Amino acid sequence: MRHLGILLFVISITSCSFGQFIPSGFDNVEFDRLAELNVISKPSSDKQEWCNKEKIERILVQSEVLSVYSRYTLNSNIAEIYKEITDLADEMSQKETPSAMYCKLKRQSIHDITEKALEVFGGRIKA
Image 1 (spheres, helix red, strand yellow):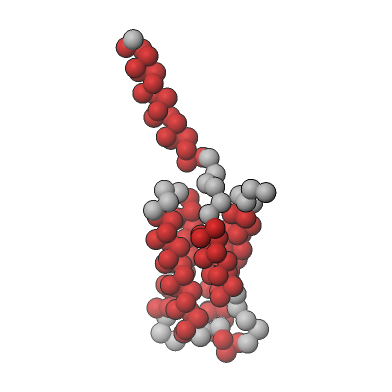
Image 2 (cartoon, helix red, strand yellow; image 1 turned 45 degrees about the vertical axis):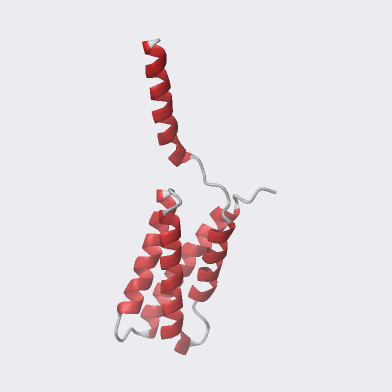
């Protein structure tokens, strides 16, 4: 009987730790926010828009919302991705007089990360 208790305890612990390797299900709220961030982060063809303060602020807010949202979904891999995006957005928003190229590169980095995440997360949609 004692061995059965130990076996059950070990199974419960290992099943919790293996949970981190099982992909999360599709989350339409998260996907929607991520898609919006992807769209607003893409640098436009208009060089004057690259450092637009309002857009940069929207990028920062969206990334912070995703970061907070993912923190409470218990998926540390996704939370780390959003933290990196938020760090990039925060760096861009804190810069007092950024060059247009600086903003373009930061926004392109955020856009590229969100593009890859959308591809991966979109693959979780069950037909």
